[in-house]
Length: 477
View 1 (cartoon, rainbow, N blue to C red):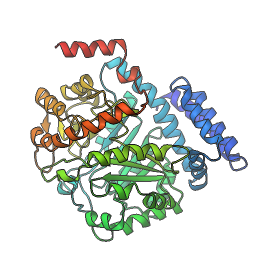
View 2: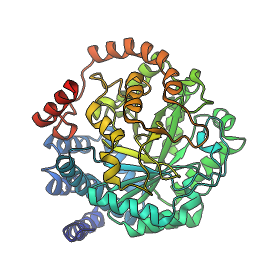
View 3: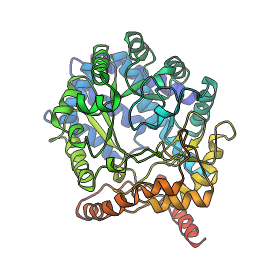
View 4: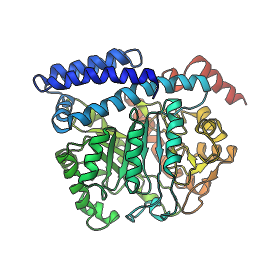
């Protein structure tokens, strides 16, 4: 941790202790103080309207985000909450954002705000449709390799690290060690919840900069049909244990053509809130791998449902106290695709550096390249020069919605398949997306034309004069 960051962390920690000490006497007043504290340190990094929006929500007792904030104070261990504020809001949110933006300008390439890492291919379950289940238990990144990646990332400004797999909690001791080593970073593990016990809850509160996203598919029937009998019950019990211990956790939900109604139903959401979940990360089913089922891709009508459901859920008057995000339908908030290092990339358990967890192609490996070298190698530079892949950010992905782009980039850069189960060529992969891409284009373009959208474009999304000139030069070449 840089000396300046260390000093600032100590100062903010002191002020945070004072606010949290008296927060119960007047929660609204003291939460507004926290917002003021955040603005004091980050006001030049984020627009004023961001902090105004927070203040307006907290000041309104009928706003769902007022309820959400009060629930955080009531439901989460105070020491844990303080450490998470320091690592996520101060570390990733402020220090990370500033450094990432500066290095994007310095190196003229994508620099990610977060990295997704597979510590292991091992998993203690065998879920249908999960490519990781077929990889076996042979592939692992060592602690030193992961630690080295994080050290490189922090130098570039990356302060948020997510773990998937495999089942990452098979490596829970290494993950906790990384959390202690990098206190200014935030960590999240996607997990099947089977390895969560009392000791691990105690460890989570001790480190304070680790949260979890528990995989769940909706109802008990739909969950167990894919994950095996008893999986749903085990996940619910893990939720109850996390809630009892006042730990922060959320959900990881893969929505398909078969379960989208269930995982967006009031009944499901209300149950998840009751069990203590504070966030839900939704993932559109992707037809990755030779055994993928194209028919599980959500239909254009279902994607439209997701688009409006997300807006309803986040609205202060119509939503519920659960933060939801969809990595497909929220493209309008981040200027389209965030992969290829633009805001994130993926490292698999063999060390291959991939543009996205769903796009198994690479031209770099952590054992032969530095992170910066990978970001400046042909595949990631191809992302840099082509993003966004569509001016309609409801069609962000170069695979699912714009498969012609992935075909072109893989062929031009010579990136190789890194699929650990069966080598899948780009043509085979993209052919499974062509039908949906054409059908969704018509509906997505209609939605884009008929609805207002946020303007996420800033100099950090490559709309500066220099960046636009680079884009034109690329087109000429």
